View 1 (cartoon, helix red, strand yellow):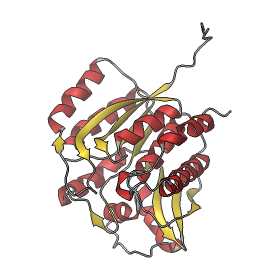
View 2 (tube, rainbow, N blue to C red):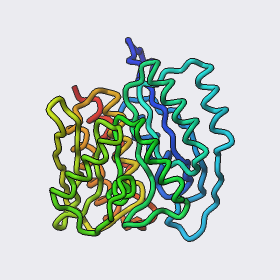
View 3 (tube, helix red, strand yellow):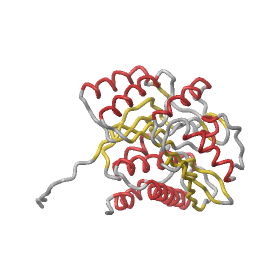
Length: 291
């Protein structure tokens, strides 16, 4: 059957900076298909490669810092303009200057969306490959972001706030959000906060009248799976590039993750293998293309 295509809509482009993990459903393996499903061309820039993520007892790992500057230089020589930039796991302090230069250049060309997901730790501790030096450098780096998506541990690390397991009090979260937005971003979401048997995403946005905050809650089945933060950030990035309302995007991401987490439990997928999201990409595509 011959198909006729009339006036195809060219997608916007997003540079996606993160590690590439072969097994475990996280980082670029999650980010690329999700951003594509929402109608945005995702162009990967790998910072490192893993055979499987760090929740597995062993894995192959290779730092790609030596190749990052030449990779970004090629994009600059091609005079590429990205409509958005997503930045996840940075495994070496050596990478920050090259990424900052790239982001500044893209901003000068007209890129208005830079989402940084500061992958530093969880449950009150830093990840194995995250050093104190990298944490300190990340505090400077997030000034590049227009949108920031830390979990509670990462928000505390970035703001030198003592971590506490029960941190769902409004005054505590408001103060934490104030500190984050004073560091440069105009919007932020503190993700995955346990709250009365549910999961709370606490959101803040700079406005002409000061700080505006809201929360987005969802039910929890008690599981904490790798890759959910990557899903969340990827949806926010694609929606921001497509100029969707911030609150609507947060709700979409929250609902999609709940769907995937519940499906993963029903399918008895081991927790460290991440979330079953592939089956539900058509639903995400449908939502992304609604008028």
